[in-house]
Image (cartoon, rainbow, N blue to C red):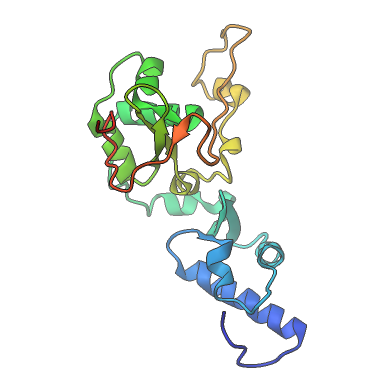
Length: 220
């Protein structure tokens, strides 16, 4: 917490807290959680309410307050994002295998390498998972409680931020995937897009060991 250098009226304190949040989010390269923001505010500050007010203040501006999972950031307004695309440089082009693996993890998480390979129909090299983790879009969640204790993978908040998603629930659904041509319009009637899970470890997952490097099988 920080001391109040001026004013002790509730309205003055709230306004100062809003300015602090605004400065933090503009200065941060990555989205910030409510807990990270709270450590810079006055004692007892209602971070959720302050974020709501700040979001309203920036509605319709060139930058807007957005939520990425449990974190918050300022991002270019969606209707203006085309202006900045030409200024962006893609430092790494993902291979088709990496893109397919990323999509499968996003929709099927938590997923093991074997489960990803089953969906793709081909083996996935360890390098593909390494590349996705280097981008910061995929993380190791835990280990499946099955023989060999394979690592389970899931997406990160950086994945949500890069693709402009507030949560995994914003991933394209069946109708959107059909409309974009990514799925055939002649799918079986019972076909359903998987529902991803990004909560804490499930009952069939164990925590990772502190020195876990993500080997396919745990050491005996």
